[in-house]
Length: 243
Image (cartoon, rainbow, N blue to C red; front, side, top):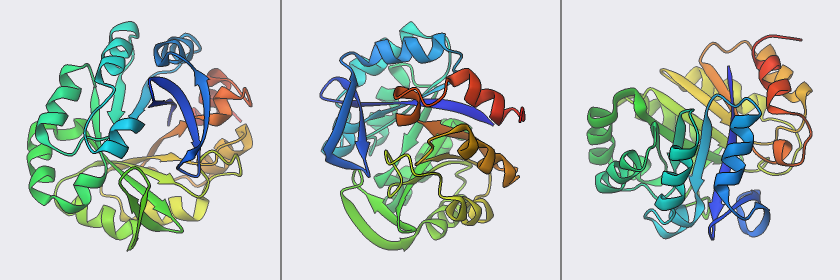
């Protein structure tokens, strides 16, 4: 498994939200490029960048910051947030994204999914964000009653092979991962997925590795790294199997 530091961009700054609420944010870097340099310098093998302004607006807002990050680091940059049309997807690729993360649009626009699968192949990732095990959309501002595993199974049938599963209830809370949710998602995913939400310690990472889900390919971590609960190097060693 790989550790991906999260860089969430809001109002041009690197922030973390609590439980997906735009009203509960903490600014960690005034320039998201500084966060990117720091994490890569600490040993990160890839970055997960989210345009939160774009997620809320429905179209990309922070492409220039994404471009700057991609130019400054020598690791793959996975980008999401507000990518709801093929033109937005292409803009993200042109800005330097190694992989593109679709969210809201993927659940409701099957034509977009089909076109993105054809255009990106395994560079396409779909982020499925869950609150109480049910899908949340539009930058986590709209709640549905659709089980997250049903969404992943349906998208998998259309050719999507990479996912992110985010537990919104745990996001930014440092309360531990949603192990039950990871188990459910692992059974639903045709391909591989990354997990995000609640990671607070190296023990949390060990708990995820102990699940021995072969299609869990990595963990996205934000607040625990920003608050120095552990380092990128320490976390990656655990994910590599070093107890």
